[in-house]
Amino acid sequence: MNDAAPQPVLDCAHLVRRFGDRTAVDDVSLRIAPGETYGLLGPNGAGKTTAIRMVCGLLRPDAGTVRVAGLPVSTAAGPAKRLIGFVPQEVALYPDLSVRENLRFFGRLYRLPRRRLEARVAEVLDLIGLTARARDRVDSLSGGMRRRLNIGAGLVHAPTLLVLDEPTVGVDPQSRHAILESVTRFGEQGMAVLYTTHYMEEAERLCDRVGIIDRGRLIAEGTPRELVSLVAERDRVRLTAVGDLDAFARACRRFTRVEGAARGGDRDDVVEVVVKDARSLLPELLDLAHRQGVHVRSVEIDEPDLETVFLHLTGTALRE
Ligand SMILES: Nc1ncnc2c1ncn2[C@@H]1O[C@H](COP(=O)(O)OP(=O)(O)OP(=O)(O)O)[C@@H](O)[C@H]1O
Image 1 (cartoon, rainbow, N blue to C red):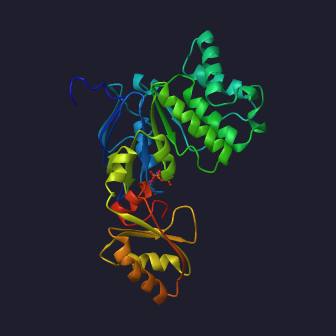
Image 2 (cartoon, rainbow, N blue to C red):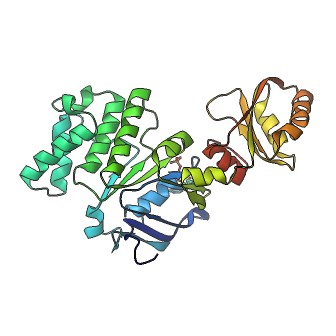
């Protein structure tokens, strides 16, 4: 890093964590600057949760270091941990306390002085869009609202680094939208955010930079635009079809010119294929479908996106 670059909020160097003979996180290094939202994108089991538990000092690395604002993070209590707000996947709140009382409770854990605490609780209620529900007990809230309050609990002590582990899994679309809006505002307020997800459209929308993690390794990193430019020469072919589409995707991957093929993103009846020159390969793909008894209903050739990057780098889809 040159002298002019600001000190990173988060600096992880060569993190490794093994469970038995499985290496869950394998030599991961990443930095996050002040105000930057960084998305760690990868399929289930890629190592995202393990990586961020080490970042937050909840799990000891087998090798490597974590620093927050220059301070070393360890599993023991220390000044670095006060700078981190961690929002786990599971909701950890007191159901019989009100929304406001929950936020006060988490603020007191960090020993916020009383007046500062009240002001901060009001700010956080606004940030998570729950001011109107401040007096209601947690057990009267919808699942999506609880998730938002869970995020609020990680924010009360005004952390320098906010770490969110898949905060939108299983929430309704309205709450999902509210969560994504809030995360955008955290970045605007100068907080550094580390965000894990396996939804590539979230990473594309929210994150200044994205790291793609697969089988414990960080295999690519950059702005969404930089990552998509890695596959600028490629086409993404979407085939809408009926039949054994998993077998069809596997057979597509056997073509040497096919860089990746998988059941497609949001729909069950779609296979996506990443290929350098779709037009020249299309007749062969259609012939293959015919031989496999797969009935192709429509073919589209789309612009590449982050999912295409993932298919290109790993050969399979994010969600597999
Ligand atoms: N405590 C543990 N003991 C043994 N293996 C573990 C443990 N925690 C994680 N693993 C393994 O390490 C690998 C990475 O898991 P991790 O939970 O970090 O992935 P992830 O990307 O967060 O996935 P998910 O989105 O499903 O949470 C997986 O193979 C998982 O089974």
